[in-house]
Length: 425
Image (tube, rainbow, N blue to C red):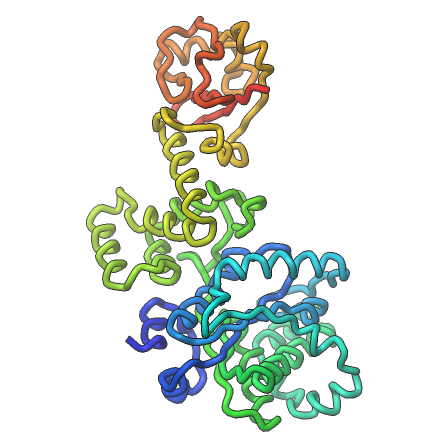
């Protein structure tokens, strides 16, 4: 299957310029291509994975990717998809963000071999260009009429109370010049991104035509939207799903995909999983027959966590997830339960106090799992209290070091879903 046909089959093509000509170009041999990333944070997030997966899939098809981090354009801010102007970043924050994103990109793309990926910073060529030079050599080639017709600009212009600054208005011109520069310096012929970048990308193909470059191409994928039309990539609590494990733990990352709606999981499985399409269709057929088993979500959660965080992080995320569904703590360690601490209430207990014995009913109240000892006793008598996912049969018992589920942790549970991790110190 031609790579363009595969991208389309996986739901990764929303618009493409001159598709037949691009297909022919990609069939002739390795093509240099790129995607841009604005360094608005020190980590990429789930939405950024759309251009990343385009880079990775085209690279595996034999083409040479460039990841452009916008050290210059990041100082301005892309108005695409934004209702308000971004706050401008200071140089120290920008440098930290660039370093963080570059490190993540270097893990997700192949930087060895004949089609090795490269990371470039557009500040290297835009930073030293004077204002008059830019207006003379670049600005004269695109009309204001064309620039105002782009959705990213028109939407902001129609919002009269907000409008758009001249700074953000010129963003598409800077990004367009990036394309021309990469074509001149690296032979780059294709730019890929999300559909919100279509206006910026086509500005680049037009600027290239007017500045004497060979034909340039653009390809954009649909934005990640859920069944309600909202952007995907945020948890139920409104937190963004980051690739940085310090911002979104591998456990929380795994859980995000495990809890996707049945409508959304098949789409993301085709987009992000490295499994072949026939295997994915078999998984989806099994999922359709027994949705309750959540085969699509489980496969997607495993594949995504393995790709982003590695096999060991996946194992720990699965182990932690099993605990949250009442699984045994046998053979688990502190390292396996640590991911829970970012997402489950927890507290510390002096080791000496545990060794002396802590009444279970007291601990249930101290941890907030129950409002009073009486309520805790009644719940335990009804079979609703668990220590390390084992039902408590003696409510008046005291917990000791023998009740540790791992080296230093005890998992308390009331009912089906109320958990609290007690960690001895």
